[in-house]
Length: 216
Image (cartoon, rainbow, N blue to C red; front, side, top):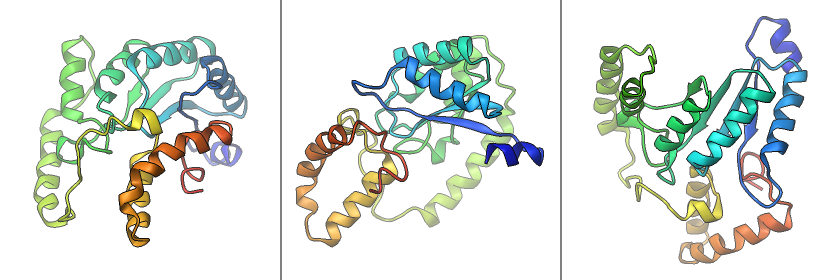
């Protein structure tokens, strides 16, 4: 895939699916990034699909990638655990050149941190994100109006799911899991499932819960 993206003039981004466990180390992640760099990747993205990358871990991982892989680093995270805003600032200070955000109306929960908040934080820290505030406000106003018509009437649930720090289940997976349990008349057993998942993950060798592993 990388070979043909490069052949036809595209930008090939390698990705690290972040998780933590007894077998995941900075050295292992750096080795993965170096392998992707050797294939021709233009940049490396740290994909924190469950929102469990802490500020300290981001500092260590981004610093190592910048120093040893020497490719631009992007960080993608979700607000599931509530840590992503603080983590993004640490990642930028450690050398990350890009972070993924969402306009404030579409942010939070299992989405990305708010663009406007991160722009304000980074500007206060002396960075220039190069963001047009008026254009962001215009985009946000568009989605604020659209959201009233399109948001599911059931709502999004709790804004922060601290349990994700234990079970590591990404937002998309947890919503599918709830739906499947409900269809089986077993939604009341969700706490048991959340207790079992980390044990199953350990039995499998601690894979990061990202597609297709999360579905399996």
